[in-house]
Length: 231
Image (cartoon, rainbow, N blue to C red):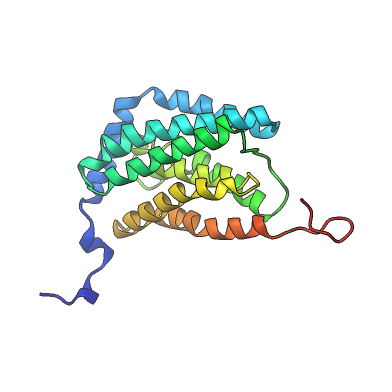
């Protein structure tokens, strides 16, 4: 019997890379043309970020809540859990994320999305661009074809990256609770992809590692005109 330190992540993988990406392909084929709906919702989010307001913050929060309910049920619970027993627990975690978005962002209106020209603001916009524009291109670029592309609002990986990016554009303490679930998904998904020797692993792991950095940067006070911390 091999010693425990000789095991690698690949030894604990419950499925092959071919099975995983085939699962994504079947999901894409089953839910099409829902991709067009999520594209429209993404454009609404972009328009809301361009002209932020309290009401638009509720709109963005509501869209994210609906998307996470959809992704948690349609992909994670119904499909991914058939090849990975842990996915069932993650589906409940993502469902909790949707409920928190609805309560904090929609009902209480405590999420005001707005870009600021600082490190966290640039990181947030960069992650959103990565998830929406770059991530769907990875499948064809890596030779898997468009049928296995992972799209924001359809697949959990780009949706989690986009959610982290959007939370970096929010001030206040409420966003910390909303970063937990997407960060945990990025960590778990990144380790899974690493075990499959997939290059996308670095994008998810990098996103997970950026969360404590982003939270710390937002909490660091900036100096106002009179040398006092700005509110």
